[in-house]
Length: 133
Image (cartoon, rainbow, N blue to C red; front, side):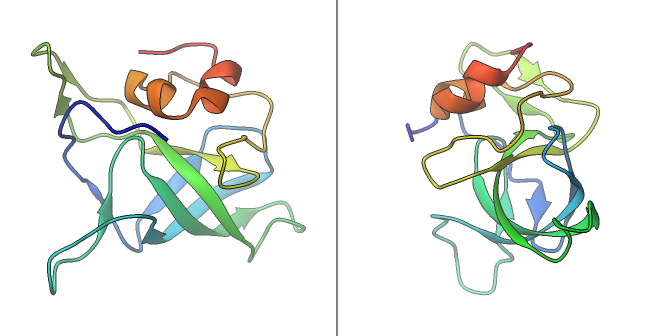
């Protein structure tokens, strides 16, 4: 997992609901921790594009429901700035469910675009993506 080049606004706090954009069987995820985040005392941890999160499956197939899964945030509504000066904002907040911590995705098809920052940081996710913005 590579470091990010741009400072991305963290817009998905704990307890946020995120839709998975893959065909893993989950329909809604609830974030309960952000992996590797160092935070200030009493500040609510939050996730941004490219972050690894742990989430519970709230809606989806019966075999997936109530499971704890690893996921990567691939889109966020809150705009963020890239080093070249462009600003990026997506229509929704979305994540990709992973098989393991190495970054291999559980699903085989992704719906919608994936942020360039995610493709650089998670190469296994970038292989499956059809559109990178």
